[in-house]
Image (cartoon, rainbow, N blue to C red; front, side):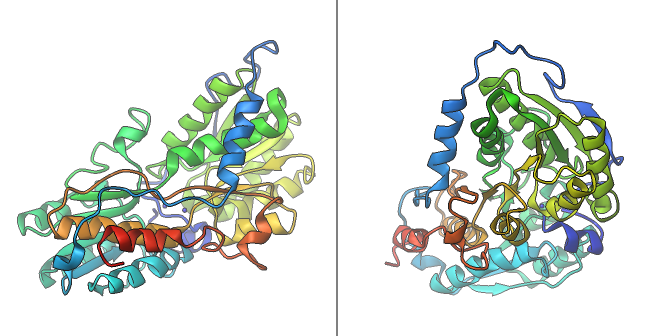
Length: 391
């Protein structure tokens, strides 16, 4: 799963995202949007299906870098500056981060806050004053909104690591804030590019050139514009005749306007066959919008994050699929970056937290009821411990 400035929106969203709210309900045709393309253009439905099938299986652990001796970090202390700690998103990251830190002999200070930028600043300043060995932006307070604090930490020679961030080099040019990674000692990236591609691939694999997608976004979240662009690019590459329309609803208005915006878009274009909210946190408002437009069972849905609401909706037959990520794995990945920085190893930005496609074919493997951190195997835990010289 993002960043926001209102507590009520955070509880609704299950997403960590930042920036000032954009205008609600703006709609635009995607590049090659509605009415574009040629029915005779080649559609790589087989290629899309191959990508989906590969990502439906239990993911393998891929080392993000070489082995190193992490014992030198034992006894060191890290301070967390978390996004709203009550979010399931943060709790799931911590379900991996805290045990991994304990295994490595690290102590962890966590800072409770209400998820606003002002609260992040307060936590950050408290962390600097306590002189930890490292500070972690946990689940993703935006580096672009904390530049003065990051600069202060760097002056105090306290390295700052951020997890679940979009990487500048992986995103389309111009879609991320200019200071998205500025001042960081290391980043543990989220699997955004693969998630975006698989959302497009899943729809194409199911319906080929009949895909007419309504893409729901929240442009103020740093990753959003890039996610939409990558979905569009994948559709253009594998299905030139496929159609897309993009509707923007700010995170702070999901609870009040996302349902009506979904309904309006579906009534405006009865030929829409797919609704693709780019974050699972949108689904609890999107699904009622589909039902109120009397399109339940007539349009399919896919999304990104693998959050509890979406997994349950798939199990109950109300949602088609989600591109799931194991945030417990993200916690272990975060500690890997922290340890490398603390012992003087060059930190890696290699993507090592995978995506698993969840749909009716494999949702039972996530538990009954589904659990967001279940169904990804546990090889990554032993894999990280071996990398650190602890197993």
